[in-house]
Length: 380
Image 1 (cartoon, rainbow, N blue to C red):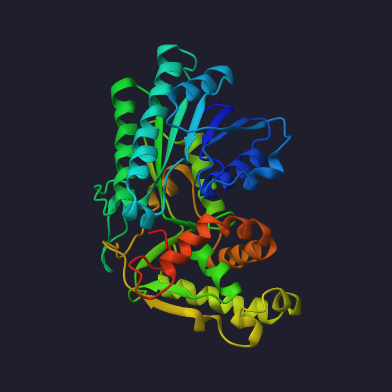
Image 2 (tube, one colour):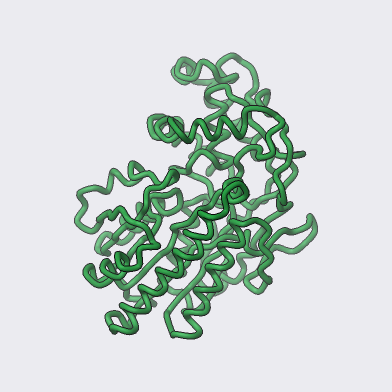
């Protein structure tokens, strides 16, 4: 059981990172939390605004590729742990522009590892330390309909530049454990959803589009399958790994809910029909939504050309982390989707600000017609 009480959270202004920072500050109010984020397009400091002024929390605007900055933070702030969420994570973007994925996901992780090795090991600042790498199930490749779910022993077979960059980072983390004795852990998660998710991903984009009466593009037949994990459950899983995980260990964190993409979008449409259809206030606010006009939101669904190299199915077996660390997801898909929809409805200013400007121009260019080679912005 680790005794670390001071943490550097990289990528802490992103979707999963910001949820984790909120979770950790709430669960462990006496721990020091320093967030390092480059605030690229998917990083949003507004996701952390409610933490400003808390004594145990601070924010640093910087890049994980800046090794000297990371070293100074570890040294000056006396930080004994790193949780690395910082990553380029959108598969479509990795297809159209892979260089950024190599820079952040591979080179950035290497710079973090080198900083940790120098300060914690060479300088001897922290004998009790932990470097945790937040990874993805996409490193394992794709499953067929009848294949068993990925276990921690499954070989890496990444299909996209994004997945390959994350696989490379995982290998680097393992090498620093084996070669230098750096105390590391890795977690590979399934598809996350929930509050603060940048609306290029499937669930966030679907909600933002259906309330505005915009098309809901779906790749190919919509039959690709993903295992969905509510982000708060992911945070709980990482908590268990940090507090009780074996150094050098790898743990799969999943939600235990497999759905095709079209099934997921249809559930969101049905939920929005119900919630908006019962609220005159929401109908007035979202007058362009089909639900405000008595028309099913599913009428917005459009099928578009499939993404290159689109993996068919992901699913992770969580029996190891359940057996070793007592982790189980607590939020079923019905509750998770309902909570997520309610969050987006209650935080319109957050996602409208995110979708303004250059990002809105980019997303319009990708999804303007059914001839697009990139489709609906789904994460995997």
